[in-house]
Image (cartoon, rainbow, N blue to C red; front, top):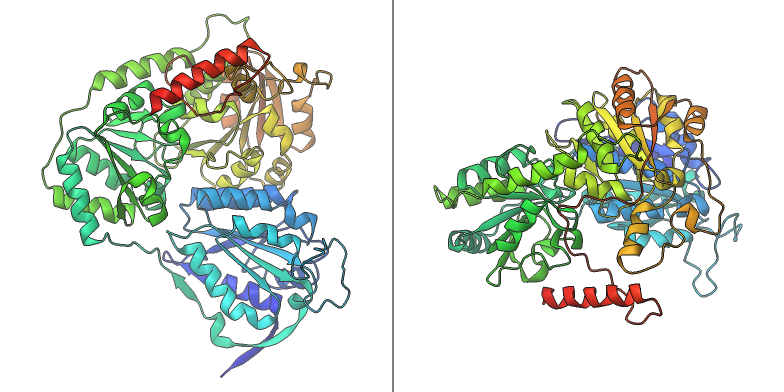
Length: 606
């Protein structure tokens, strides 16, 4: 057997560089790394040696650079991915939140945190957290619940089994998610005679599981028996590349489609069968057809509580759920009739079996009425003296959007209002991290999208709260010459949670700056963004925002536009029940009133 002597770190990066997707592209587009104690000597030297084949990117924060990697994979429909490396200790723990983002959203990212010495010679090492009852534990064990596959590399030859398992997980549509290879720092530097064949070029093809014949037969029977079905399109439609297939299926059989946060843009907003966003942040049109439906046909959705209105939305007493999903865990939720298969293949098999079966035309007036109400909230305001609303900001960004625009967000007020109001055109023109709704994803995520598709116009919608949590990758975007546009809506605190607090009867407390024990803070976001090299401007009105966005389109480097907004208004139309428990006992009458409303809503759900 031919062998080559390499350190374990050299073997790892050589293997990564030789993995390809079915389009003959390198599966790994690069490695994000912040070097420190635990990865600089072994892995750092190995990455330097292969930098022309496998680029290394330097981030500003371990969590945010992982967010960039995750957004990159999502924008490319999981066809490519990135690895992320840190030192042991705090560097590794900073990435655990990002691992949660990837896990919930079923997105591939390879975490390579440094780990303690396998030989325990210098035990305990710098940054080591010692478990008094278990000598095998390190901080990297925190990755276990948020990893699809976890391994600790304690000998160089462990890579021979760990790496194929890692790639199998990352590229498997059903099990896809984060992989953690905790890499003991002494092992990184140890040499081993690896089989040369281990580093041969390998192609990883997207598996497209066919439906089970019995499940397909039952699904066809359920569809034929239904008189009023609705399709709930989730993120799996995008990952399977099934947007055109969904469009053709819905058109042939005349089934209305509603979209989750992850599924939005599966159909163009103006498709006559796109009845809009569903659930808690949904449109009236979508929620009405879901209330009436006797068959809820979920495609690639996890049926999260925001989608289902905490399972209060589907009111038809005779309704059934049919779930087409590549992961059996999701296709069997809530006693659903499962169709465990690739979304594209599953739809193709269903439409072939259904033939010319068609349903009655859905009520087009529902769509027209919804868009009329939505447009009224996003149009230019008549009162230019009032603080702009987030809805009006969305209207300005919508007017500036082009065919190549991607709007993205993650947390706070904007996700709900973008879900309701944004008119998404082409697939993947809407990028929302709402599985984990992780504050701080936005700026780094925008960078990741731009790295994935450099010809796209990336507009990041971010509130002042999320921007304050994590903004440093703006400097990375500027340094890499990758232009993104940030629209910072400054409502001087956490406006979204403040409204939720008020809605559950609570007093305004600890969310907006003027309701905290911190003196109101006048943050100069323009100066801050400018200090990181971005072009930055503050605007006072929506008309000024329109002008600034037009100027940003022609800018050559990242632009930040700041606008003060009113933290209180939300769209009056749309929306649905969301189960947020209200205290049973309180001295505040507002809480007791909210509890009574809550109990009535729970009773209605039953």
